[in-house]
Image (tube, rainbow, N blue to C red; front, side):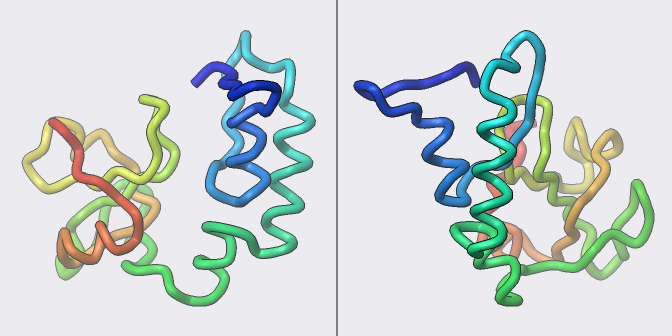
Length: 123
């Protein structure tokens, strides 16, 4: 995403400040990187947004078994830092990107993945 403004307020910065966005800098859009990193640190320190949910133990799923695999009992791969610009996507076995996805969380059911804030991969 490029920089988005509503009036004089930068939406990107506000989402990071509230803890609902994670910093991901992709050149050439680096102008506000320092600001975003500062806001993200503050949000995590104050446990705002997703940082609050994750630190309170409400996270669903489990960590992956290895870099590329999930346990057989939790085969759904959750990915939180996608290159599509979206966050929180889960991949089902047989999906186009399943074998290419390094899971960050693994889920037993689609419902569990959705409760963790993910949406299903479109492919």
